[in-house]
Length: 489
Image (cartoon, rainbow, N blue to C red; front, top):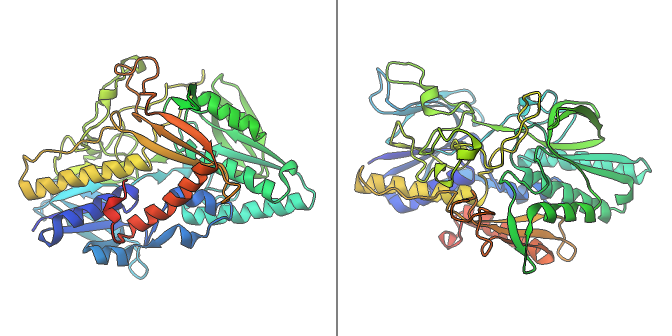
């Protein structure tokens, strides 16, 4: 019997582990190591953050689901990897520390035959002074990155609304909290859900709402923007986004690196090198992402972290990390199998893999400050990658080390995104978009980098219904309810 260890129980890790357990059956063991006791459907946190859903509606306990699937669940965080074993342990192993109540800090080594790193990101609030503590609950701003963060955001937003009802005008600031953030989409959804809720509360005229982002233009979203079909016409995401911001009377400040957060104000630097301040009464700023800080050690105890992981802490895979300058970047730089090039029994999935480079054009201020979105690897791509990696590992375990590896390049992958712009069965709206491929291929699709026949978007009530249905479908799937495998990633 061989053992597969999956680090992380988010979208990618949960997908990989559950499919692996189904395909392997009782012939092999699947172990999941994740610090959280609950699974969180993160795309719906924005609704928790405006009080339209509860924490319980976007989370569920992992233990009973994994028990049903025959998965060995360890509520713990991975600390280090020994891919060659050690002087005392012949097999490769992971050192973990339990986060489970009553066992906090207790360490253990978990041997493995194959390893999938799906740890996701460290929410690097510390990268911007004042943005937040290690838990993201700063005294100055809020976050919607976790369900608990979103509950706190909702409470603070309600206080803001009460002040407006009492006649006190409020300044609301939403966007990115650093020059190298990703996940602009979550902030985009949140700002328009706030705007929608203020209208419902009858206080929209008492609020000044502003967007701040490290994007060089509205609608970049970390993908270099896109051209899509809207109503039969091909338009840029820049025009699409600017139209929505103008329609909702939301101001924007782009090409901005938030350098410091204090009570009621931020300091920022723009791409032209100028610096300024922006005041706020309520602010939700997404933190930058980094690897979770896993260490790697050779058999003799030598630190080989730099061999296994990129400088940002994400695991190296079969990508071209020597692409060089922006002019040399190609779609083929992106990984296909997500196998670590040094240790062939290790893979990375979802946010945990190190991209070869960003997707958007690299930008920096005259002061040398990088101000550009880092590449998104969340949602649908994470699920697709997790499933493909699980398929590869299962084949290696059952067919031998020469088994074919399954591929899921983001440069050959389409993705669908439904971005909420306000919740309500009759008043809600959402932008429903498809992108193909996620990473643009300018050699195959000159000019736009994408196939406009499969890249399109519409905004309206129907999009909201789709997002609401998807919320229930993906929770149903993640709980492994009957027919769960029929629901696509």
